Image (cartoon, rainbow, N blue to C red):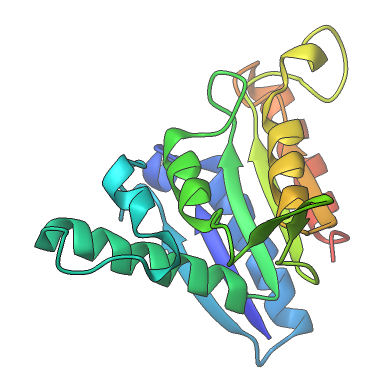
Length: 202
């Protein structure tokens, strides 16, 4: 059993999504005490955004024609997709920024979406190659997006569900802490609801 824990908040030690994703991992450790946990903080150790030369290295198609810095990016891409494929459960701390995910998380997602590794094109359409995993997304939102007038502005959950489904993953579970910027009462209630959900998420 391998658990891949990914955080993507720019808020450092004050990050709500980091606190809650850590609770999720602690809960999983209580269920699987021998599980191996690999942690990546995408802000503390940022991943460069996709470029043409970086993309050209997907699938091991890289070598002497690229400079040393680009070859290092290719090795990182291989490491990242390898970590993803080796994991059984993914816990992703995903704060909502401007109605979607952080740019740091997007950079990581772009590295693991690799044809021939996590998906394939076939004559019948795309086929995901990463089935059998569970993805737990712990989302922290300043407002309320699971109900009310702002639901249509939630591009975070639909995107992440669509992305992982494209890779063949159907077990995708969301836990939200909403109202974090609406006032102390709303923030406290959002955290309470999220913590209760985390105790039942797996």
